[in-house]
Amino acid sequence: MNAHNMNARIPVLFRTYLSPKEPSIPCTVWQAARATSAAPTIFKRVLIGPAARPEPFIDGGVGRNNPIVQVLEEAELMFPDRKIACVISIGTGKLGTIDVPNPGFFERNVVPVGVIQAMVAMATDCEETAQQMEKKFRHPPKTYFRFNVEQGLQKVGLGDWDRMGEVAAHTRNYMNTLEVDQRLATAVKAVREGKGVIRTSATSMEQELLC
Amino acid sequence: MSVKDAIDCYDNLAGKVFSTVNWWGDGNYKAELLEEVIKAIVKERTNDSSAPVFDDGALGGICKTCVPIRQLKASSYVCLDLSAQ
Image (cartoon, rainbow over all chains, first blue to last red; front, side, top):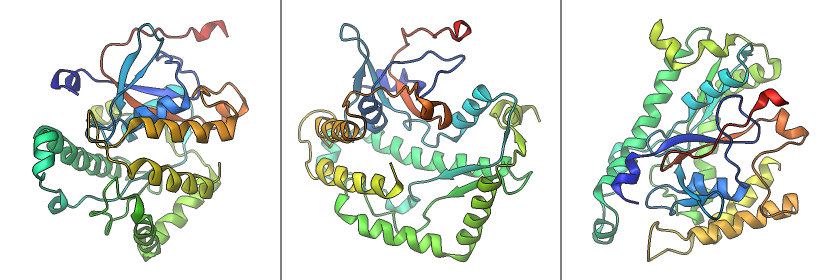
């Protein structure tokens, strides 16, 4: 992937439903799975579209790893008159700042340093967004729930497919802590009750800026 | 697909896809392998390895799902006109 293309990326959504506003991009389930996995250094980009003029797509996480802002915008677009009962956001484990590996000899020659820096920025950006949401949903309380394994996943790489047992164990430990267990119970209650408490239009970022 | 089925699928997928390192071209892992495994899962569930994301069945309306992606250049796709429906 060259630098020029990295700069010209446009966020889009592949939907199971029609959007009243956004263009619909015809694609298959496997193409969507390929596109969402096409993060730099992991998988190459995917071409989607008519055979005569397919267009290149990459993972939406590049540049905006936590899609919560897009989700809230989409909720407003699809349900402008409805209220949200709760928002549940699930992370893939926190990345420790000291755990970002120094590129080895091979990576230095193959993976541009800029890409590694971009991946570090993505993880940071992801947590920053989570913090902003925490603040935004302070009132009313018990509407926003973020779950993200705090400890143990720092050293498990994407390609460590043979360490799933470790991932499961760390996740169980996280779920068993008193604070998370209580929060989970509150989230389950909010989902079950399904009582709308905050308008979809009150959650978009623009609204926040106006306040 | 149940949560357990999804986890089993991922275990199988991860073992197949991430155990082979791509030494040449873009990406550390082989995109073709990922494609193959995903197509097999979709075929098993829907009978069509190229089933579309768009779901005009009952479930598409109830459980709305979207995947955030980035397009590497301006789109030439046009918006479908919903007013006709």
